[in-house]
Image 1 (cartoon, protein in one colour):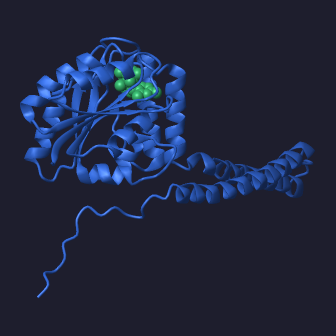
Image 2 (cartoon, rainbow, N blue to C red):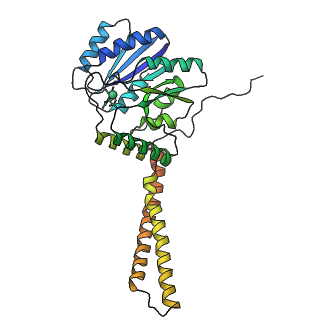
Image 3 (tube, protein in one colour):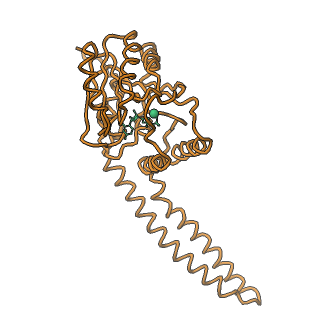
Length: 315
Ligand code: UDP
Ligand code: MG
């Protein structure tokens, strides 16, 4: 039987949230369609999340509930991937278990997909988030930096909260890369995306798993995964050092030859040192360019993604 909508719900230590989530999702999604499933991914929770999910599945026979349990905590990226790979819906939503993302938005997103055949994905971005000014500023800088470095348009405050058509889900699942950075993957695959703002609600129970250190690591992973700029950095530095060294050496030689002053020995020395440094940096940078190409190749990304082919009719 075909399923209209799948909800993919990554859960890590959400024992206090899963029941509330299911009840709210049931009442809201049930008004939109009867044909839906909920795919909970228990990402190696150490609390009673797994037990609670099994009980919910027993007690709610009227809802199609899948539970995928990981052997340990693999992280939200892995949980989302497993959920997408095991979803069957024509539309698939990724939503957190902690009710910070309102399930009624899923209906809003599905209705946009219903009404606009050209739209393939509806992504929610955080209109306002109750977090420190410093974190907000750093996040803005990160989105600017990664958009520039990767040549992919990252929406500021984009979240993983989104609803996709099956074609988008199949494309995402077909990307086998190990180090996954979904915000990048969602942008990289293309497709027509509509972004709508949503307000993040307070966490009902438990606490966020994303401390400052983890967020910083996540941001760094994103830049490494989506851009080879860091690998090319020595190349640019080397070129700049080379230019400065040539100017210094010419300056020293001109002073030496055309004036009665004796060009300071330090100018020659500094110029030569910079020149040697620039050779080393350029060599490392060239290696970086090659490693960047290998890095892109080992991800085995498709060369292109076909959304539709219209061809001539056969006679
Ligand atoms: N999550 C997960 N694995 C992890 C960390 C988080 O599956 O290792 C889930 C978590 O249970 C929640 C969602 O990812 O459903 C978002 O996590 P969290 O609420 O901690 O992030 P925040 O909303 O603070 O950004
Ligand atoms: Mg949360």
